[in-house]
Image (cartoon, rainbow, N blue to C red; front, side):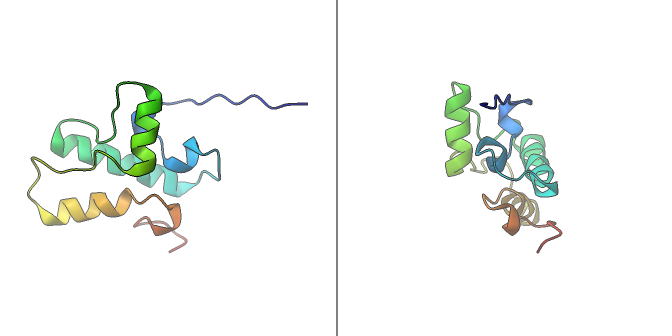
Length: 96
């Protein structure tokens, strides 16, 4: 019997491990927090593409994670450390 999955959520905030259909954890929420913080400071989400597939590819490659308006180095550092591709490397992850 084959499984059918559906992806629920706004693609701009979805963590790489959700897209890859691997283990989703607390670290996935940390990723989304990083996207929200980026959006609050920059006025847009970092990985938005023309299509959902473009957005997913941008997430997988971190394409778009460029600060143009934010000058605070502490804020940038926090966001970059929340938006690590590997959940184990995200700041705040309990497994670190």
